[in-house]
Length: 318
Image (tube, rainbow, N blue to C red; front, side):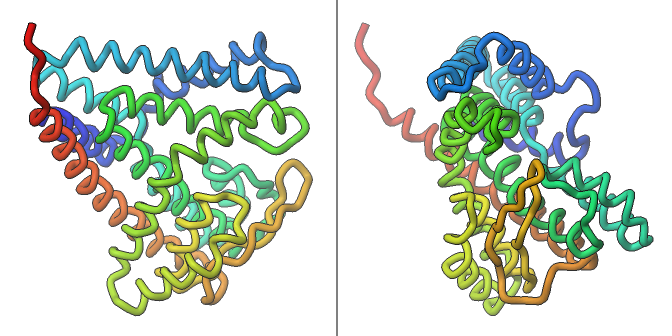
Protein backbone atom coordinates (compact mmCIF):
# COMPACT_ATOMS: atom_id res chain seq x y z
CA UNK A 1 0.00 0.00 0.00
CA UNK A 2 2.99 2.31 -0.40
CA UNK A 3 1.36 4.01 -3.39
CA UNK A 4 -1.65 5.06 -1.31
CA UNK A 5 0.58 6.20 1.53
CA UNK A 6 2.75 8.21 -0.87
CA UNK A 7 -0.27 9.94 -2.39
CA UNK A 8 -1.59 10.90 1.05
CA UNK A 9 1.81 12.15 2.23
CA UNK A 10 2.40 14.12 -0.98
CA UNK A 11 -1.06 15.69 -0.80
CA UNK A 12 -0.42 16.68 2.82
CA UNK A 13 2.94 18.24 1.88
CA UNK A 14 1.22 20.28 -0.83
CA UNK A 15 -1.44 21.46 1.62
CA UNK A 16 1.19 22.55 4.15
CA UNK A 17 3.91 23.97 1.92
CA UNK A 18 2.40 24.54 -1.52
CA UNK A 19 4.73 24.74 -4.50
CA UNK A 20 8.44 25.19 -3.75
CA UNK A 21 9.42 28.77 -4.61
CA UNK A 22 12.79 27.78 -6.09
CA UNK A 23 14.02 24.77 -8.06
CA UNK A 24 10.50 23.60 -8.86
CA UNK A 25 10.70 20.42 -11.01
CA UNK A 26 7.82 21.58 -13.20
CA UNK A 27 9.64 24.84 -13.89
CA UNK A 28 12.70 22.81 -14.84
CA UNK A 29 10.60 20.74 -17.22
CA UNK A 30 9.24 23.95 -18.73
CA UNK A 31 12.75 25.27 -19.32
CA UNK A 32 13.73 22.02 -21.03
CA UNK A 33 10.59 22.15 -23.18
CA UNK A 34 11.36 25.73 -24.22
CA UNK A 35 14.91 24.80 -25.19
CA UNK A 36 13.70 21.81 -27.21
CA UNK A 37 11.07 23.93 -28.95
CA UNK A 38 13.84 26.00 -30.51
CA UNK A 39 14.87 22.86 -32.40
CA UNK A 40 11.52 21.20 -33.04
CA UNK A 41 9.25 24.14 -33.84
CA UNK A 42 7.58 24.44 -37.23
CA UNK A 43 4.07 25.38 -38.30
CA UNK A 44 3.20 21.71 -38.72
CA UNK A 45 1.23 19.28 -36.60
CA UNK A 46 3.79 16.54 -37.17
CA UNK A 47 6.49 18.66 -35.52
CA UNK A 48 4.20 19.26 -32.56
CA UNK A 49 3.57 15.54 -32.25
CA UNK A 50 7.33 14.90 -32.19
CA UNK A 51 7.85 17.63 -29.61
CA UNK A 52 5.23 16.13 -27.28
CA UNK A 53 6.41 12.56 -27.86
CA UNK A 54 10.03 13.38 -26.98
CA UNK A 55 9.19 15.23 -23.77
CA UNK A 56 6.43 12.94 -22.56
CA UNK A 57 8.49 9.85 -23.46
CA UNK A 58 11.50 11.10 -21.51
CA UNK A 59 9.29 11.93 -18.53
CA UNK A 60 7.67 8.50 -18.66
CA UNK A 61 11.10 6.86 -18.70
CA UNK A 62 12.15 8.82 -15.62
CA UNK A 63 8.96 7.79 -13.83
CA UNK A 64 9.43 4.12 -14.71
CA UNK A 65 13.01 4.16 -13.41
CA UNK A 66 11.88 5.80 -10.15
CA UNK A 67 9.03 3.32 -9.75
CA UNK A 68 11.09 0.20 -10.44
CA UNK A 69 14.15 1.21 -8.47
CA UNK A 70 12.11 1.60 -5.28
CA UNK A 71 9.60 -1.22 -5.61
CA UNK A 72 11.52 -3.56 -3.28
CA UNK A 73 11.30 -1.09 -0.39
CA UNK A 74 7.93 0.12 0.85
CA UNK A 75 9.52 3.08 2.62
CA UNK A 76 11.52 4.19 -0.41
CA UNK A 77 8.53 3.76 -2.71
CA UNK A 78 6.30 5.74 -0.37
CA UNK A 79 8.81 8.59 -0.19
CA UNK A 80 9.39 8.72 -3.96
CA UNK A 81 5.65 8.67 -4.61
CA UNK A 82 5.16 11.41 -2.01
CA UNK A 83 7.87 13.57 -3.57
CA UNK A 84 6.39 13.16 -7.05
CA UNK A 85 2.89 13.88 -5.75
CA UNK A 86 4.03 17.05 -3.99
CA UNK A 87 5.87 18.19 -7.10
CA UNK A 88 2.89 17.84 -9.43
CA UNK A 89 0.03 19.04 -7.20
CA UNK A 90 -0.92 22.69 -7.06
CA UNK A 91 -3.92 22.84 -4.74
CA UNK A 92 -2.43 24.91 -1.92
CA UNK A 93 -0.85 27.45 -4.25
CA UNK A 94 -4.14 27.78 -6.12
CA UNK A 95 -6.20 28.59 -3.03
CA UNK A 96 -3.42 30.88 -1.78
CA UNK A 97 -3.62 32.93 -4.98
CA UNK A 98 -7.41 33.07 -4.67
CA UNK A 99 -7.15 34.30 -1.08
CA UNK A 100 -4.76 37.05 -2.15
CA UNK A 101 -7.10 38.22 -4.92
CA UNK A 102 -10.05 38.10 -2.51
CA UNK A 103 -8.23 40.38 -0.10
CA UNK A 104 -7.20 42.81 -2.83
CA UNK A 105 -10.74 43.15 -4.14
CA UNK A 106 -12.18 43.60 -0.66
CA UNK A 107 -9.68 46.43 -0.07
CA UNK A 108 -10.65 48.00 -3.39
CA UNK A 109 -7.20 47.51 -4.91
CA UNK A 110 -8.41 46.58 -8.39
CA UNK A 111 -5.07 47.21 -10.12
CA UNK A 112 -3.27 44.75 -7.83
CA UNK A 113 -6.03 42.17 -8.33
CA UNK A 114 -5.77 42.52 -12.12
CA UNK A 115 -2.05 41.76 -11.90
CA UNK A 116 -2.45 38.93 -9.37
CA UNK A 117 -5.11 37.08 -11.37
CA UNK A 118 -2.65 36.78 -14.27
CA UNK A 119 -0.99 34.03 -12.22
CA UNK A 120 -4.14 31.98 -12.75
CA UNK A 121 -5.53 32.86 -16.19
CA UNK A 122 -4.27 33.51 -19.70
CA UNK A 123 -6.85 36.14 -20.66
CA UNK A 124 -6.17 39.87 -20.92
CA UNK A 125 -6.90 41.32 -17.47
CA UNK A 126 -5.94 44.96 -18.00
CA UNK A 127 -9.53 46.20 -18.43
CA UNK A 128 -11.41 43.80 -16.16
CA UNK A 129 -13.65 45.30 -13.50
CA UNK A 130 -13.85 43.84 -9.99
CA UNK A 131 -16.63 41.38 -10.84
CA UNK A 132 -14.78 40.15 -13.92
CA UNK A 133 -11.62 39.60 -11.87
CA UNK A 134 -13.66 37.60 -9.38
CA UNK A 135 -15.18 35.56 -12.22
CA UNK A 136 -11.73 34.84 -13.65
CA UNK A 137 -10.50 33.74 -10.23
CA UNK A 138 -13.45 31.40 -9.61
CA UNK A 139 -13.26 29.88 -13.08
CA UNK A 140 -9.56 29.18 -12.52
CA UNK A 141 -10.28 27.67 -9.09
CA UNK A 142 -12.74 25.28 -10.70
CA UNK A 143 -10.71 24.24 -13.73
CA UNK A 144 -7.36 24.08 -11.97
CA UNK A 145 -8.73 22.10 -9.05
CA UNK A 146 -9.45 19.45 -11.65
CA UNK A 147 -6.18 19.92 -13.57
CA UNK A 148 -3.79 20.43 -10.66
CA UNK A 149 -5.32 18.19 -7.99
CA UNK A 150 -7.94 15.68 -9.13
CA UNK A 151 -6.29 14.57 -12.37
CA UNK A 152 -2.75 14.00 -11.06
CA UNK A 153 -4.06 12.11 -8.03
CA UNK A 154 -6.16 9.82 -10.21
CA UNK A 155 -3.34 9.14 -12.67
CA UNK A 156 -0.97 8.56 -9.76
CA UNK A 157 -3.42 6.10 -8.23
CA UNK A 158 -3.67 4.16 -11.49
CA UNK A 159 -0.06 4.24 -12.71
CA UNK A 160 2.08 5.37 -9.78
CA UNK A 161 5.03 7.70 -10.26
CA UNK A 162 4.97 7.42 -14.10
CA UNK A 163 1.32 8.44 -14.08
CA UNK A 164 2.01 11.47 -11.89
CA UNK A 165 4.94 12.70 -13.96
CA UNK A 166 3.46 12.02 -17.39
CA UNK A 167 0.21 13.74 -16.51
CA UNK A 168 2.01 16.86 -15.32
CA UNK A 169 4.19 16.85 -18.45
CA UNK A 170 1.13 16.70 -20.72
CA UNK A 171 -0.70 19.40 -18.77
CA UNK A 172 2.34 21.68 -18.73
CA UNK A 173 2.87 21.30 -22.46
CA UNK A 174 -0.76 22.22 -23.08
CA UNK A 175 -0.28 25.38 -21.00
CA UNK A 176 2.87 26.23 -22.95
CA UNK A 177 1.96 25.47 -26.56
CA UNK A 178 -1.68 24.38 -26.65
CA UNK A 179 -2.94 27.78 -27.77
CA UNK A 180 -5.06 28.77 -30.75
CA UNK A 181 -2.92 31.70 -31.86
CA UNK A 182 -0.96 31.88 -35.10
CA UNK A 183 2.23 30.42 -33.64
CA UNK A 184 0.76 27.38 -31.91
CA UNK A 185 -2.47 26.55 -33.73
CA UNK A 186 -0.73 23.71 -35.61
CA UNK A 187 2.37 23.03 -33.52
CA UNK A 188 0.39 22.90 -30.28
CA UNK A 189 -2.45 20.77 -31.64
CA UNK A 190 -1.05 17.49 -30.26
CA UNK A 191 -0.45 18.90 -26.77
CA UNK A 192 -3.97 20.36 -26.60
CA UNK A 193 -5.70 17.20 -27.83
CA UNK A 194 -3.67 14.93 -25.54
CA UNK A 195 -4.49 17.16 -22.58
CA UNK A 196 -8.19 16.88 -23.47
CA UNK A 197 -7.89 13.08 -23.44
CA UNK A 198 -6.05 12.70 -20.13
CA UNK A 199 -8.40 15.15 -18.38
CA UNK A 200 -11.69 13.78 -19.70
CA UNK A 201 -12.40 11.40 -16.82
CA UNK A 202 -10.80 13.52 -14.06
CA UNK A 203 -12.88 16.57 -15.04
CA UNK A 204 -16.06 14.58 -14.62
CA UNK A 205 -14.86 13.12 -11.33
CA UNK A 206 -14.11 16.68 -10.17
CA UNK A 207 -17.59 17.83 -11.19
CA UNK A 208 -19.18 14.87 -9.39
CA UNK A 209 -17.16 15.65 -6.26
CA UNK A 210 -18.29 19.29 -6.45
CA UNK A 211 -21.91 18.13 -6.55
CA UNK A 212 -21.29 15.70 -3.68
CA UNK A 213 -19.71 18.53 -1.67
CA UNK A 214 -22.55 20.99 -2.36
CA UNK A 215 -23.90 20.87 1.18
CA UNK A 216 -27.55 20.60 0.17
CA UNK A 217 -29.69 18.73 -2.30
CA UNK A 218 -30.84 21.97 -3.90
CA UNK A 219 -27.30 23.14 -4.64
CA UNK A 220 -26.33 19.72 -5.98
CA UNK A 221 -29.37 19.72 -8.29
CA UNK A 222 -28.50 23.22 -9.48
CA UNK A 223 -24.96 22.10 -10.20
CA UNK A 224 -26.11 19.08 -12.18
CA UNK A 225 -28.57 21.23 -14.14
CA UNK A 226 -25.78 23.67 -15.02
CA UNK A 227 -23.52 20.83 -16.20
CA UNK A 228 -26.22 19.38 -18.44
CA UNK A 229 -27.47 22.71 -19.77
CA UNK A 230 -24.39 24.90 -20.01
CA UNK A 231 -21.21 22.80 -20.24
CA UNK A 232 -21.66 21.84 -23.95
CA UNK A 233 -21.43 25.52 -24.99
CA UNK A 234 -17.99 25.92 -23.43
CA UNK A 235 -15.04 25.62 -25.86
CA UNK A 236 -13.24 23.20 -23.53
CA UNK A 237 -14.73 19.68 -23.32
CA UNK A 238 -13.43 19.41 -19.75
CA UNK A 239 -13.17 22.91 -18.32
CA UNK A 240 -16.82 23.64 -19.07
CA UNK A 241 -17.97 20.60 -17.07
CA UNK A 242 -16.10 21.58 -13.91
CA UNK A 243 -16.84 25.31 -14.18
CA UNK A 244 -20.55 24.64 -14.72
CA UNK A 245 -20.65 22.36 -11.67
CA UNK A 246 -18.98 25.03 -9.52
CA UNK A 247 -21.30 27.75 -10.88
CA UNK A 248 -24.43 25.74 -10.09
CA UNK A 249 -23.29 24.69 -6.63
CA UNK A 250 -22.19 28.24 -5.74
CA UNK A 251 -25.36 29.77 -7.19
CA UNK A 252 -23.46 32.18 -9.44
CA UNK A 253 -23.06 32.84 -13.15
CA UNK A 254 -19.69 32.23 -14.79
CA UNK A 255 -18.56 32.32 -18.41
CA UNK A 256 -18.94 35.10 -20.94
CA UNK A 257 -16.46 36.77 -23.27
CA UNK A 258 -12.71 36.78 -22.61
CA UNK A 259 -9.93 38.42 -24.60
CA UNK A 260 -6.94 36.28 -25.59
CA UNK A 261 -4.09 37.76 -27.64
CA UNK A 262 -6.33 40.62 -28.71
CA UNK A 263 -9.19 38.37 -29.86
CA UNK A 264 -12.49 37.97 -28.03
CA UNK A 265 -13.75 34.45 -27.33
CA UNK A 266 -17.29 33.66 -26.16
CA UNK A 267 -17.14 30.89 -23.57
CA UNK A 268 -20.88 30.59 -23.03
CA UNK A 269 -22.86 31.21 -19.85
CA UNK A 270 -22.44 28.79 -16.98
CA UNK A 271 -24.97 28.76 -14.15
CA UNK A 272 -28.26 30.56 -13.66
CA UNK A 273 -27.45 32.76 -10.68
CA UNK A 274 -26.26 36.36 -10.47
CA UNK A 275 -22.84 37.29 -11.83
CA UNK A 276 -19.97 36.15 -9.60
CA UNK A 277 -18.59 38.83 -7.29
CA UNK A 278 -15.65 39.19 -4.93
CA UNK A 279 -17.53 37.74 -1.95
CA UNK A 280 -18.02 34.50 -3.94
CA UNK A 281 -14.27 33.75 -4.05
CA UNK A 282 -14.18 32.49 -0.46
CA UNK A 283 -17.00 29.94 -0.94
CA UNK A 284 -15.42 28.86 -4.22
CA UNK A 285 -12.07 28.24 -2.48
CA UNK A 286 -13.79 26.23 0.24
CA UNK A 287 -15.58 24.15 -2.40
CA UNK A 288 -12.23 23.58 -4.14
CA UNK A 289 -10.73 22.30 -0.88
CA UNK A 290 -13.64 19.89 -0.35
CA UNK A 291 -13.19 18.58 -3.90
CA UNK A 292 -9.47 18.17 -3.18
CA UNK A 293 -10.16 16.08 -0.08
CA UNK A 294 -12.72 14.01 -1.95
CA UNK A 295 -10.32 13.37 -4.82
CA UNK A 296 -7.68 12.13 -2.38
CA UNK A 297 -10.19 9.64 -0.95
CA UNK A 298 -11.06 8.45 -4.47
CA UNK A 299 -7.37 8.15 -5.39
CA UNK A 300 -6.57 6.11 -2.28
CA UNK A 301 -9.48 3.77 -3.05
CA UNK A 302 -8.34 3.38 -6.68
CA UNK A 303 -4.73 2.74 -5.62
CA UNK A 304 -5.83 0.15 -3.07
CA UNK A 305 -8.03 -1.61 -5.63
CA UNK A 306 -5.17 -1.60 -8.13
CA UNK A 307 -2.82 -3.11 -5.55
CA UNK A 308 -5.31 -5.82 -4.61
CA UNK A 309 -5.86 -6.66 -8.27
CA UNK A 310 -2.12 -6.97 -8.74
CA UNK A 311 -1.82 -9.33 -5.79
CA UNK A 312 -4.56 -11.51 -7.20
CA UNK A 313 -2.69 -12.21 -10.43
CA UNK A 314 -1.04 -15.62 -10.61
CA UNK A 315 2.73 -15.52 -10.64
CA UNK A 316 4.64 -17.11 -13.48
CA UNK A 317 6.86 -20.06 -12.71
CA UNK A 318 10.51 -19.51 -13.39
